Amino acid sequence: MFTSLWLSMLGFACSRQGLETCASQPDPQACIQRNIQSFEGNTSDVETYCQSLPEGDLRGECAFLISDEAKLIGEMAREVCQFATPFQEDCLRHAAGREVDSQILAKLVNSPQPMKLMPRIHGVVRQYLPPEIAEPMSREMMIRFQASQVTTLFESNVCEGLEPSVCAQVYIVASMEARGQWSEHLREPWMDACGESVTAQKAKDWGWKEWSSTMDTVVQLAYQQLCQALPDAKSDSSK
Image 1 (tube, rainbow, N blue to C red):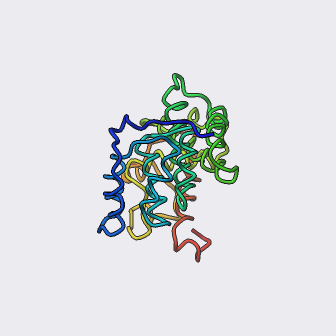
Image 2 (cartoon, one colour):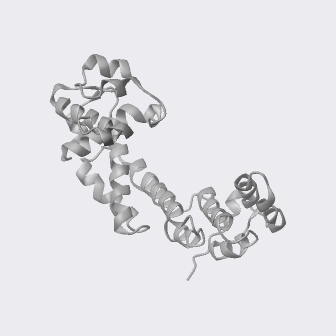
Image 3 (cartoon, rainbow, N blue to C red):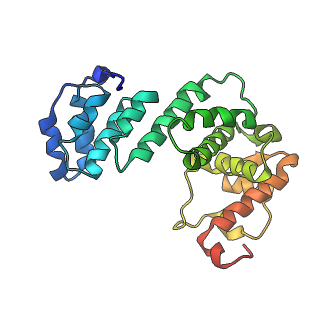
């Protein structure tokens, strides 16, 4: 049974005629984005509404964008995302992330230990996605949250209970997330020092987080992980 969801909060008023023209537009996604703001209906109406578009990517994009625009979570998100083929997984990932952010992370008063936070995140994500997807996604969300708790100094409390290899990923995200992920097509200073140890001065020059002495082994492991992820490291096991 579909749960009614009136999307009038987005100011929707039905206009399928405009949506039908999107397939021929230079930027179909932008066209769909504009037109879904004129949709009025409940979750069971999404399939009919998006059928104005050709079967395939654009039709799935329509349902995906409706879910994102309305910030759907729970059963309503799952109902809409079933019409988002071939973007069902992405649609469900977004919905799961929204629920974790709003229902767990935004309500934390005192940051729990990572190993206590992980099952709470996984319990939500598993409602949307199968285990083989939910587990790594939950781990990534936990890592990103723990990394957000690192302000100036990387200390052991942020990794309590985590294996060193996972803690190393917390340090990587904490140090690099604000600058965006590195690209294999862009050389960065840290890439030229692979094979060496990370020093406090090097980390400062690279804009990475400082760390307490107890975390030195983890930081060195984090640097090894980064260097091993470089494309040229695949043909050179010494890196």
